[in-house]
Image (cartoon, rainbow, N blue to C red; front, side, top):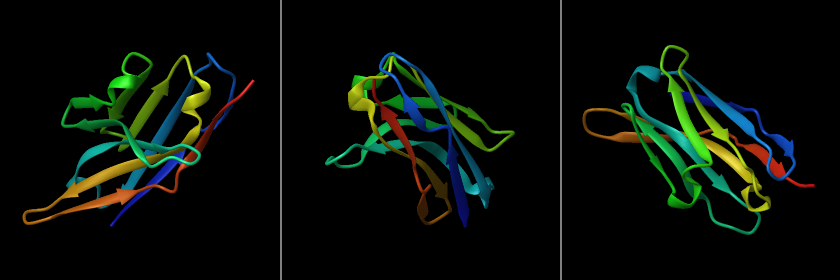
Length: 118
């Protein structure tokens, strides 16, 4: 089992910045992918960014504003969000994939709310 706990969400004005953190605990040795998804009001959950063995993957529309990083020593993944826009308002979910020999398990955090408002 893997537990994911997010932090760092909150209220921010347009143009502002926030950094989200997600700490993993439990069977962390099996984790190969960590990242972030988000779900805005009335929208489906969408990919924000993933980190996999040093490689990163972003939703195209967020490239240049959002940066994912990972501290393997702390079992933590971060999402730096700059130049935030109203449409970035969403619940941001931490994601991790634990890879085993014959199967993989996806884990999700409970989410942290980012509210962009003036």
